[in-house]
Image (cartoon, rainbow, N blue to C red; front, side, top):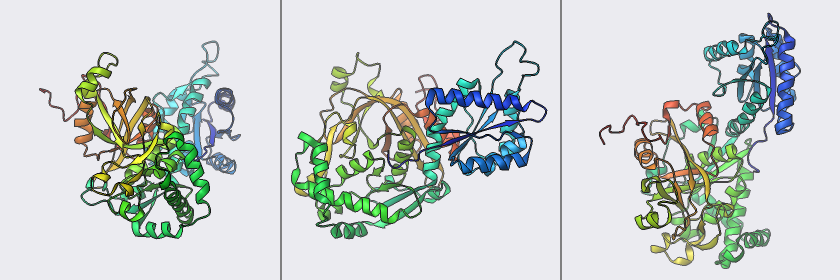
Length: 495
């Protein structure tokens, strides 16, 4: 992915002055050795300064990790740890921070002079973090030996990558949102609270920039690249020059407008006037940019673009944005799902969008026209969708949303795309999520979520949950699909 941060994590060991400093130092070295052996040296840095009950040591360690170019920090309690200086380090570090602690190694002699009591120290560290209003990621069970802590730090990498990415993200929108489409409307106040910048533009600005790219000498090369990607699916070759012109327009706009920000996502207008004025639909171009790590949401869905970017950072892979669209017909369920997969019909649904899913996430693809728009417009101005069934496999359906009163809310659900022929149009797949029917009613409907959901290809709920907590979503505002027997607060106990 070209539009996400590359993370370097600094490991700083801390020591209480009434414990041997060597205990923390040696455990730090063992931790780093375990990490490098298992995951490589590229994203980790061992700070040589061990903070021993000293604010001066804290400043020295802070300066060292900054000089080393660290984007994220792990405070490692090799023993009980100095609760003041270690939490000051987290407070003054500009980036995501994690706390982990060392477990005791052996019963043979080390439980006297070699006992570190970091299990105890983590409690005081967490208390002091709260006193100072300092955010920090603490794993579900934050105490372990060198190999276990190495695994915890590796799980922190995508979380840190996302937090850093959001702090340097600009969302560029082209709107306003389509008429009679309040579903994607949400206050932008929370974007600023998250440290995300937004640039809102008129689609007339975009149209002007598009027209200025007419005859751009780069267009033939982009067309060739599109032809290579589409292969036999290139069913609308005459529209490719316009799509290439539009792609260059967006890419040039990003370079000219991202300003001091490093990363960009786009919330684009795609109907109703887009087709008649531009002469095509932007779906395929949206898919190509998303495939490069620059998410482009449909229908000026700003929080959809934000959600896509979060998923791109967490998974370090292509994502998509789909409508939670329609039920699976009973005859399709009976013939293709029942008895083959452990899902009820209410666990299944079809995720769809007109053609914005990257070709790499489709079993096969074809360039076609937008069937829904062509019901009321000439077919020739609705060309540009990328159609095909979405690749089967594990997925995470999720979204971060601001409520009407500017409160952050999110949902996460693990599921899969089933290898079932959709017999439909657009970029579409048959999705299955355990207990989807109840999740649909008591999280999606009850939580007033719009119909768009972001899709990451794999199970990333654990990291997404920690990201949402870190950026300020209250745990009770993170919905998930409750297993059977676990009642939602709004669920009728007599139903």
